[in-house]
Image 1 (cartoon, rainbow, N blue to C red):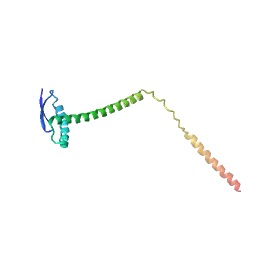
Image 2 (cartoon, rainbow, N blue to C red):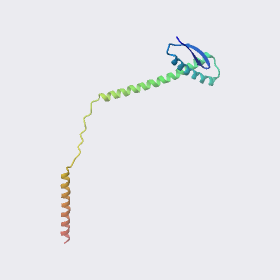
Image 3 (tube, one colour):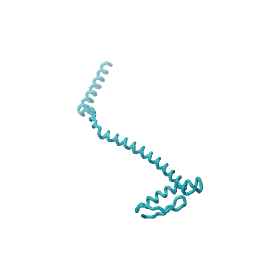
Image 4 (cartoon, rainbow, N blue to C red):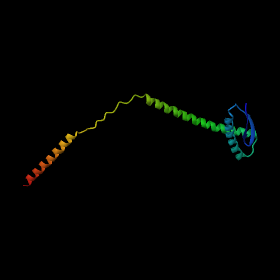
Length: 131
C-alpha cells in the first residue's frame, strides 16, 4: 500500500492509499487544504484536530449543497425524459390538408381579354351618350 505525504494547513501528514489512487488522495487533500487555508486566514493558528474537523465540516457542507443541486438536476432531467418519452409515444398527428387555389394561365388570359372587351364596350357606350 503506497504511503503518500499530503499537506493540510501547513502541516504534513503521511497517509496510505490503494495503489493507483494517489492522484485522488492528492486532489482530496488539496480540497481540504484549501478549506484549512480559509480557516487559518479567518482565525489564525488553531489546533490540528480542530482545523481538520472544521475544514472537513466545511467540505461536507459544500458537498451537501452540491448533492441537493444534483438531486434537483436529476429530478428535472427525469421530468424532461418523461416528457420526451410521452412525445415520442404520442400518435402522429394527421396531416393537415391545405388547399391553395391555382388558376390556370388560360383562364387568367381569358379573364383579361373579357375585361379589356368590357372596358372597350363601356367606352363606346359613354361615347354614344355624349353625342
